[in-house]
View 1 (tube, rainbow, N blue to C red):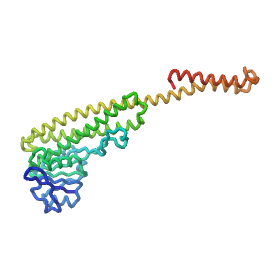
View 2 (view 1 turned 90 degrees about the horizontal axis):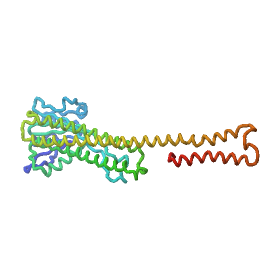
View 3 (view 1 turned 180 degrees about the vertical axis):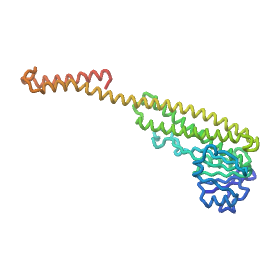
View 4 (view 1 turned 90 degrees about the vertical axis):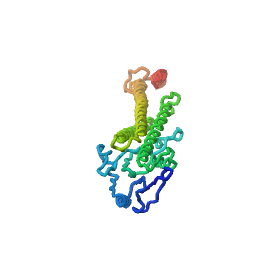
Length: 338
């Protein structure tokens, strides 16, 4: 899919209809390619004489080649975008294991020159859709004729989405913490294996958010270099986003610590439940040993045992067996071991 945009007189972005390379004129300030076909890549080559990287090469690119300027003065940036696969559910009655947060990391390539920005990605991303909605309204009163502002706007949308993901994860951990630490509802807690799995999903989410935030910090550090953008007018926005990234990294670290605490508690509950099971199995032989001993003695083929003759012998032995069975049971119940 190929989408193109031009800047209007009032500075906002509007879609342009693209049916071939002949529609790709220099006035287009942003060209967005989503899993482009070979034909669409050929359109870019015919119109702008630019060879686009393949989607597979974006995934395999080394960290040292993610940010650079080529001999033609085109700035190349490859960065990660995190997208949630499922929405956060705040209603605990509707939430189950399938509704826990899940996210995927996608690599997006930016090719920037003085007049145009080309983006290449393999999937539709929420951050791009949110930025396009703001750009059409021009919420920030920015002149989008400068493609650098489009690049910075997309990075800001990425930052906003990461912030939303961390906020949703925080809400989830707060609800989970209330559920786990509330003694009155501990008997109603879901299966501990499912709870540990849900926490593992959150750990995966935070790990991916950490990766994207660290990558964004590297991108902003690269853009802040004097030779990267060639102007200092963008420095205040870059510094502001860098500060936001720093605060989100600190918040992500706090969530990691909270998640580890909850995981330790849940694992402790699982170990306690397992110990309770082993204790019941160890108590059961203690309860059955005395009556089994009496029954085995009176099962021997001998004539010298007391109460082995007479009409009341059977009931005496049965009473003795029940006494040895009920007595330890009552004692263990009194001790609250069973």
